[in-house]
Image (cartoon, rainbow, N blue to C red):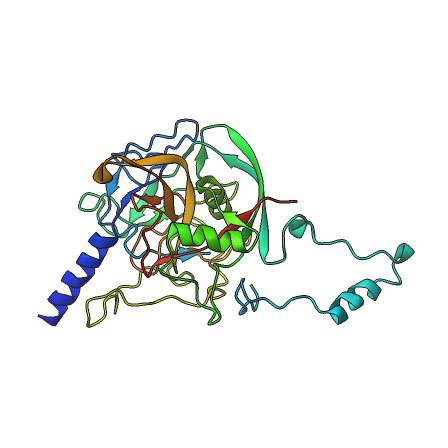
Length: 324
């Protein structure tokens, strides 16, 4: 009986957090939700899958060395360290400083440079599911076919994105944040919320990987697919966040950590979403990456139908910035 109540409690949590889930603005193939044939030039947000897949009830995020300091609490460069930097290369030609690593040019040190060619229309086909896609249209995919097929134009992109999720003093990703709050936090740091397309490219890279780390689902390296202890005795979602710098192998081609699992991350939708269940209200808020539960937890899906004031334990923050 206790197990039954736990299951019912988790179901109610999922329903309360549930939005419309899709590969928005790239509507998924209805016959196979894990065959994404997506075209940015035709942002069809019309497919609004009500997802008991748990695509956005409390969701996840994955995305390296020791980065225990939060992005809002990193130590400033000291005068001594600055002086050391100035004198370190005195023996170099004309005493010039060593060149900054190419990947860091144009971005603050806590951010990764995302630069390359993004495919606007891809096909990703799942060849092995975790559960039956017949019973669950949002079934998780265990293995995708390789490689992803690029069927559309490529668009050059260049911007900066936080390497880690924005964290508090305890090192855990900020939680229970609305889209409006996330936007204000990023702006207070001299940054901005990522666009949907920016977040996607930072996650999947030029090869359009289904998961940031490849084609095979791996909950051993990312914080997702947790099924035990998801609901407290009070019937609320249990907090299973991990440190923002945990899971160093849960990393994207651009070196961005925990982009799937851990905490859902707010983005600005590339195409406004008009919510049928909210009097056709226009929304620009979307969630990417999922959280620690058994979600799809991959790069393409976006959860929407949660407005700019919605917040829950599983909703957090990651920021972007224009590259210099």
